[in-house]
Image 1 (tube, one colour):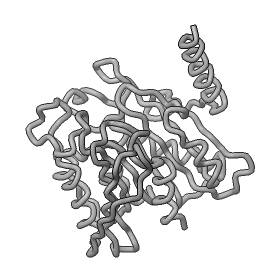
Image 2 (cartoon, helix red, strand yellow):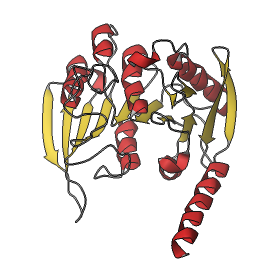
Image 3 (cartoon, one colour):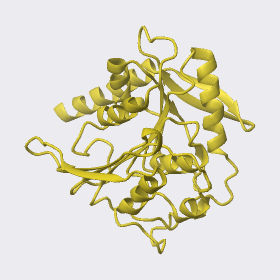
Length: 283
């Protein structure tokens, strides 16, 4: 009975959080898209905007991320867009997985349209737009780094990967700060990569290779490695920071030793660490 009451309380809390973060619609690419938006009380004009992208098969549910509370503490708007369904019936971001070949949805365009809409409607900053995402949402961050680096002040993939296709097709000359948080024992998005496409998500490079690529692209000459302080029972995090890049663009990697495929069990406060990185690029 006690367990049932606990579960009921969790669902009630989740529903309460969802109700507190209103859902809106926006037409983009001929499709009615939806998103949730959290605007902290008393938010200043020209405030930063953080986009949070859910994972494969996921939903735009703020309570699964905890970014609203970080937004309240630091004064930025946070938007949770909803991905469309692919041929498997799963909600997702179209990043070019092999099984998305017949998916006509252009999510890069959708996010462009969404950002323009939010800027205009809520008088948000033109320059201080950031994007983070979990898993498939993290993969989308790498696509955005390649396709729209001038739109985002910084990007923060969590448990994401950079496909070989993105690596080979990237032609953008623009540097962009990037911060990946990833567990070494992630068996969904492999730390060591999957060049043979054994997982079916398409070939992708290892996490260190992806991070090194962006560090080189940003022309970061310095690489510092630190072990972050941890509390008893927490996972150990090794911080790789590539610094001194073009226009101050840095690339960070938090290597969570023994970490799995998770937003919350990363050895750090994921939302606070993401904002710590993003805030360095608020102009």
